[in-house]
Image (cartoon, rainbow, N blue to C red; front, side, top):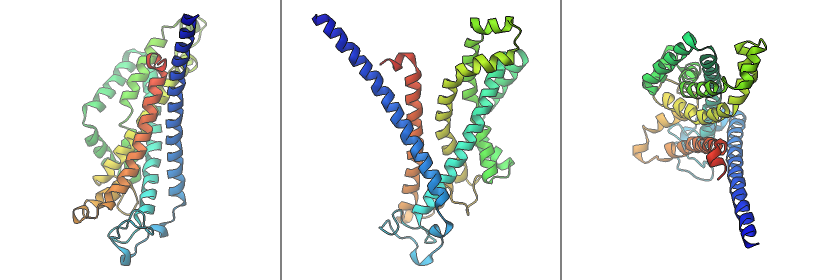
Length: 289
């Protein structure tokens, strides 16, 4: 009787650990999604007048009227940082979505077609990963004319290689399954089997990759803008704000860089934690802990 009770307790403990992991994952995803929506909506609702120029209030330290202080033109850093984060997140979402679609198409095509298509995709992956990432971002953004269009194209065209390899590896394992071979014998084409059998099977890995791709996208967007190859100075963006703050931070105006950087760091950490928890939960070994 005692052994049976111990066994039930052990089973409940294992089940409790699983539910705890799932609850943590759902909470992290919920916080990340709420932060994302809140930042986007707040950025849309913020009017340009709220962070307009006011030379009579320049370089004010954080206070009740200006929680994030003001900059060298007297612009309110709270509203400007919120608007800048909204712009950065918007670019990150669009660019990571476009990059993930490229990765899915390339990964599935390389694994299903094989031959020349597989060699071409692998060559593109090696070429993209062989060039230092930041240099490639700057080059593409410069070639596309900088600005919003340039930085979006740069992020979208440089973040697909790793996810392409993951998708390709998953499809290579699935394409030899019996139900896939049966569909071939029934006269179905490779692309039909890929769309109806293989893509649904790789969607979990694909979605986790998209979540993990997003923080890299917004960080690299901010980095390219910080270097002067992204958003123009007149557009509020985290990279622009941090670049301008470097001119005045040595004079003791620490708030110009700290608060915008914390907003960006929080967004990156939330989505990174959500992606890592999803990956652990989907993994059979860690998912049963």
